[in-house]
Length: 92
Image 1 (cartoon, rainbow, N blue to C red):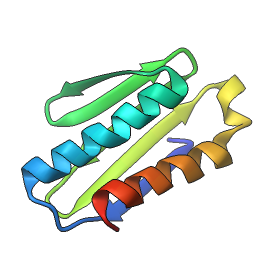
Image 2 (image 1 turned 135 degrees about the vertical axis):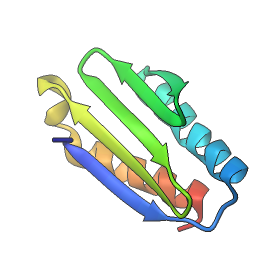
Image 3 (image 1 turned 90 degrees about the vertical axis):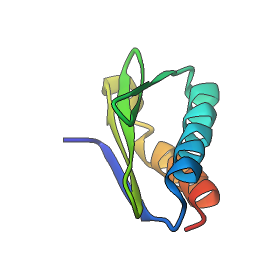
Image 4 (image 1 turned 60 degrees about the vertical axis):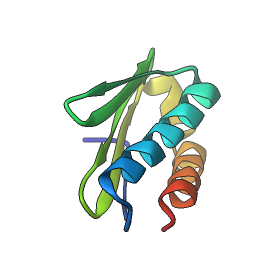
């Protein structure tokens, strides 16, 4: 089970939604030193103590993040930052 699970509705085209997902990933990568890669239409990101994915569907985007022990203490601030970033780029 993910420590952080956020789903937002969107009205973007598939190309726009993928670009928005990449913007979220770029922000996460910069803030938390994550490595990101696309894998079968799912954006996966990771670093020591953090693993997650951002899945873009036709009308929604979902991010799921599993936090290790060190990062779990910061789950709520991380959740707030990720949610704000997603709302900004997906226009929710």
